[in-house]
Image (cartoon, rainbow, N blue to C red; front, side):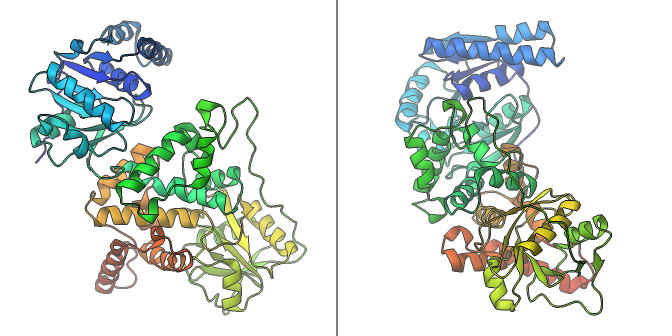
Length: 531
């Protein structure tokens, strides 16, 4: 059993950070603010000076907000020693390497570090993509080596992945966890597997978004808005890739792709490759998916709403998934009536009728397919949302038989209830549906293969990406049956293994069905639970 009680600065009086780049300077500042003396090493003097300037700016910002006083500010700055001489780390009992993602360069540095520090010192890497077990092979004592993967910006992000190699000792792991706790961070123990936890679980966010752009499902600004409003992302995937750096993001994807023996789920985007070739890295280069030359970014333009020329009625759906949206329409439009006696069958698991128009949550089929299979000319497919009762933007696609007037009037009814509609290309799974299905399947496969338990993986995903919702919450709200049904259709249509339904999902469904049969059909509390 690992002891997670905080040990405080007494265990490691001095910490070394190797590399004064963005991550290194951030980690050094975290350690200094937590009471440690820090040796920040780099062979580039300009990097060290930039690191000091960054620390000064950050602490001044914290002081301006009243979070620290001037005395503590000075103490923190004085506790960071800048050095170009590796011998200055000889008294450090914890060394955190944060140089560029180059295995050969890291291995060579570790050999020099072992010649300087004591036999009891722990050596850690901040790598985000290289196997920690492989890196540890270059040490004389690989049992004292592990990963401490901080997230950018290190002073603000709460998560640290503590990555255990196959050779890391229990004592080293325990001490590393206690160090993370003493820095007021949340440690999660991750396996030395491709992408660890967060970068592995996050790949569908980028790859599905890039695929949606390549397929012409919609424009960048629309896709980003839908990700924020329908999937509750704090930042759109394209804006996030610009912030991370397209080159960095692509490198991590390639690393995961190669380390999983070229698993189709992680195949990199050719579009992203071409943008990196053109040096369109995002914010740091001044241009990426968005421009950063001072021009205001374009807003997503919603579907044009047309004031109704006819009366409208809606019926309850066969699924509770879309009911909150129906309630919003009924509450916000006095002229819309609820259909009675008896409701028509939509012939879909997640659909309802607005007059003669079938409105269905995306179930892995296009609107044209649903129209053909149900013999209903007018079909609107609504992309998936975490909460149809609060979402302010929804993606939709339509069948060829739906006229523009009817679509505009439906947009008017939804706009009156606070929902903007964005017309997407009519492809199976649209955008958010495919993205979330991929996220849920990736999460499920990770748990199935014992990468982590569900709660730990969920915590890592949410804290590492500043997300309020993980696959665990999607499963709880929507349930495994939906994801299995949609995954099967998408896998049949596209053939990509990221849509293949995970066996973990099937096990959840069986468990849910078993519990329901034992407690009775009226107990809804078990829907989609993972235990």
